[in-house]
Length: 588
Image (cartoon, rainbow, N blue to C red; front, side, top):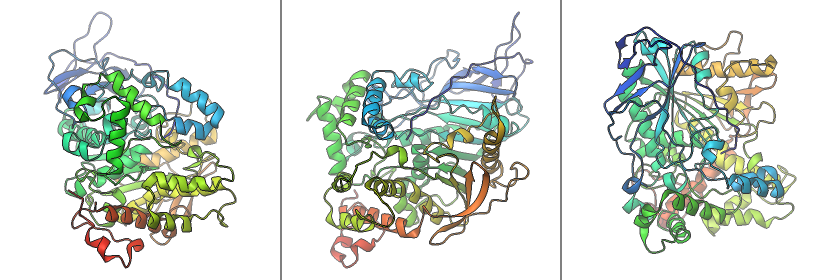
């Protein structure tokens, strides 16, 4: 859920001895250089795109993991790849359709600069701007970073699978998410995989019509397809399919929450460990009304009113993308229109409620859960002294729900000792409800299995922890900043390799205990410009997060969308047995 500048890294190749093993094929020397190894899959063969001689890492770019989601496969689950006999070099691979987060730009830059930036962003191919390929509907590809010893079958390594963020409307596997630093700094003891998933309306269209005629949350199905690909083919490149860590930030972190609770925990999550940074998602639960209205509004701007999903499928890629952008432009600032939504299947109900009702994959062994110290600042536009804007936000989020709005206005009053301005009020609301309370819900579900972080370096802004996660080397400047980045990353890599961030961390770092549960979470690792300390986290308190869980439960139960047998009671519905009796009335 952030904008970042991406770097394009140039490939390097080097000759290797000729041999064939482990599903990898090394070709004979030519007069000038040797060709790179190839990975033979049942549906095609992919040649490595480059060899990093300094770190002994092979990079396979744009391996297809699913068929092009076009035509009848638009708004559908990912389908198996179409077999090909042509050797693939990684040159072909698109970035999934992107939309400019205009509200974010305005919030971060102010109305003047934000409007200018939005105009510029809206006129370019965001896929190329973000350091990746041009945008295309044919975008379901993944990248693979493998140490040569794994390719040769000498070792069996744990695998890290990265899920990118971007508000569910922006982002790709490319750019700054280059896995070289992670693999290198692990001592060539991990394999890194990153895959694309569909975004915006292409990946997160929802509502009752889509439930009948398509697949809501198709982007989550794409992410799961990458995990299934890893499990099926890891032995071909020296990976341990039973030792997968899923890492993600922002929308990527929110995606991990949805993967942990997919199908109410009735199917395995397909990963053993996780690093969840700044997990975020909007609360969309009214499948038959609010979500269906969003779908009908998109039909209208696309010129498909009354014609259903097949009309959207028939649009060419450009027309569909333009309709998506036009719809997003009609929304209040800071709202992106598309993202995870309950669907009664993959997302039975909100992840927080699945955690609360015990419906999640309990076999995940260890998690690192984090938030930054200022999650909301870049998303907030200063409302001045206008106290009614907050009410407008509540009404947009879940309609004129008097019960919920009364509770939220009581907890976030216009005047409070906690904030001096309306901007601070907005900030507190967004930070706790969109971001930090998610940490508490996962901590409670996986009690005794989590290590928690507050990342507070610099201003501690949203997304500031991505760079150290992908730290490569000190570079020209080095110094204390690079040292802390390397140390931070060493905790994460140790966790991926062993399940314990301490076992293989950089020498001299403090021992990081599992979090201590309570009204406030204790023994949280605080990462600052000066180093690492342990703190009590004041951004994930029971006072804030229990109320927000009650709100989510009230919205779900009140709408009749609770899964049978997984109803989460809400303090807001105390004394309302008639509402509780109909908690699952609209689930099917």
